[in-house]
Image (cartoon, rainbow, N blue to C red; front, side):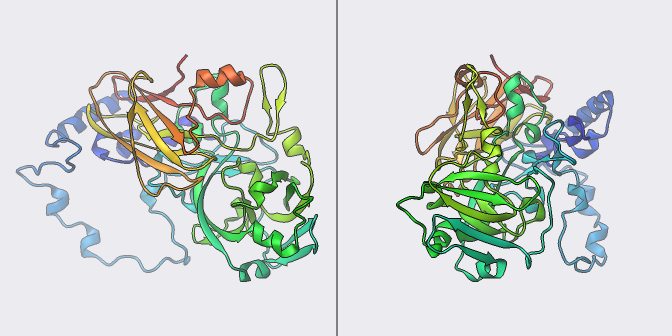
Amino acid sequence: MNDFNSTQMGRLQKAPEFFLSREAMTLSRDDRRSFLRRAFVAASGVAAAAAGGRALASEGDPAILKLPTHSTGLGAPVAAKGYGTPSKYEENLQRRESPGLTRVSAASVSFAPLQGFFGIITPSGLHFERHHQGFWDIDPRQHRFMINGLVKTPKVFTMDDLMRMPCVSRMHFIECGANTGMEWGNVAVPTVQYTHGMLSCCEFTGVPLKWLLDDCGIDLKKAKYVLAEGADGSGMTRTINLANALDDVMVAYGMNGEMLRPENGYPLRLVVPGVQGVSWVKYLRRIEVGDMPYAAKDENLHYVDLLPDGALRTYTSIQEVKSVITTPSGGQVLLDKGFYAITGIAWSGRGKIRRVEISTDGGKNWKDARLETPVLDKCLTRFNFNWTWNGSDAILQSRATDSTGHIQPTMTALRAARGTRSTYHNNSIQSWLVSANGEVSNVQLA
């Protein structure tokens, strides 16, 4: 089990001279303070961080004046295994196992290191994982996909059949319904990897489900829902309303320009944009068209919201508007006061992000952040905000608004409506405390 401190922040973005370096990560607290003092002296020639770079000392910089080995020697040949891997200096940027969520026979959740990502696309090897019965590497030659139920002609498709058909590629986020779930019960886990890391965003390639349903002759007079069934041992099945199925749902075999990874459903999965990840059924083997919800075990007993009066809210699939600051965030350290680029991501299952606001005083005052392109439907949107830290305590928050007018709520407002016994669909505003000593931690405001 990895403890929370083992995340060590991953790779930090922006102005590295102002963040805790990899060398400092290995030091004791007292040694770290000494290291920071020396770092301040070394950085004394730096102009405003917004200008970038540092003034060249009179004696010159040895890293420039003396040619390193890689400038004078012969480098390595092409990758021995034929498949590229990250630099050894980036080994700390890893998915991390769940510190205590559902287990079956093996680890069932790993969190994506959001604190180390740039832009909006999640690298395939760092996509978060959620397994209900472990993952499989299925032989695509033996895999079959069937459509039956309220259709004129039930059909079975091989992978070759599907990959010969016209295809589309689209970018969408996928978020587990339990993402940020530990925060419901006043459990302030320390890093953004653990608070929000059951979230990823990729380019998916496949065949729109509508085309396949049309090919089978769907009975539009009677059909109201479809049931998606996976081929793994959990018997994962989920009801999806027909409006979604005929809109942007995709039977996908590709992710980020290559075939799906086994942990992400290889060779075939459903992509249901804007809907919680459990409906993105992996190892997809069957779609059944029906006239009513199916009340499967994973939507009747699990993935339900427990309300204050004891009632269960079911079929609450849409992932509501949400955002989080990823830098600075919990577990990171600011080394000196001055300029910082606050950055993070926003998303909504209802459409596009229209606005993100930033507060540096715990929600008393808000200012607009910059939305970086592209801004797409049901996709992550990167935002940035210029901030000059004066060295005092500060509470950083982001608040997103989507194209339907929904605004991200505070945790207090969400608990007032939903109580404190939920696990799923926490889209509340996240707060990061920047202490006067530069350390950033997770706090919940009353």
